[in-house]
Image (tube, rainbow, N blue to C red; front, top):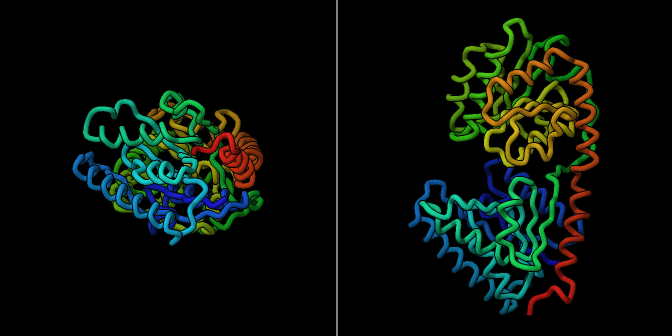
Amino acid sequence: MRIAFYAPLKAPDAPTPSGDRRMARLLMAALRAGGHEVFLASRLRSRDGEGDPARQGRIASCGARYAERFVACCESGRIAAPDLWFTYHLYYKAPDHIGPRVAERLGIPYVAAEASNAPKRAEGPWAASHRRVVDALGRADLVVGFNSRDKACLLPVLKPGSTYLDLKPFVDGLPYPERRAASVLRSELGVGNGIPVLLAVGMMRPGVKIASYRLLAEALSALPPARRWTLAIAGDGPARAEVEQAFKAHGDRVRFLGAVGPERLMELYLGADILAWPAINEAYGMALLEAQAAGLPVVAGDTGGVPDIVADGETGLLSPEGDVAGFAANLDRLLEDPGLVRCMGEAARTKANRLHSLEAAAVRLDAALGDLLRPERMRP
């Protein structure tokens, strides 16, 4: 089928890398792997991060006008009409102003993936955007969820007969290469085999990312003074100075590697021993999943959809969100037990390959989308 794809938070071809952009690209790849023709329907970014109702209104008007133009192009034959509209990641700061209108006018199914409903935003500066998200979800024929903790708030606003699909986050290129004892990363850092290499991967921007970096720095300070470790940080951004200040007390035990590309990131995953990330207010964290697929155990915060991809006590260790002492205790547990690190790393790699491949996601998505196009499910 021909699928119109839209990501209101960030287009899949946006210049700035992020986990959100990565997941949008992966979804498009999974849909294509199912044999579908997928095209990017719009690059309109609907995000309002400041809670400005006037700005939200302007974006909504822009989206409505675009939807009308899109429908007109389809009806005139200027572009081939899609068989289905697929929107990825809509929430109160980035609603979908286009997809529901187009789907209604063309009489095609509307699909929303990684949507969230925040009832506490029904009042306040994002109230109008919240209502638009609820309206879109109320029109959706299929909602695809990656985060099990979003489900409870989503189900009550879905229309009768709509479908909810639990889909595990996924990565491509599995299985990743085998890990090597003598890694390139160790040589680069000048670290001997007896010193564990920790890895943190995250953009350096204000808000929850900075909060995660600060918690990680505090947790390292809470470790026993004699505990040996080196931390490599992959990431960059406008708040880098704040991140560097947070780790200043740890001196050259912390190495800043800057922004890295996919191949370099894979070297880091395969060369480190433990992925450490507090994951404050994280949806699920692509780096957490990629690290496990490469055989790294994860120490993270128990938040959002993180428990959906990190099996606590099996592939990693989770602590309550924002709990410095709990995060430090879990980190210390792995640092003092290399055997547990190896065991959890092997379990992580096995589980990621079994449950989180692009191929597995493509099969499940294809089946769910095919069901929407059965004659009895089609709208007049």
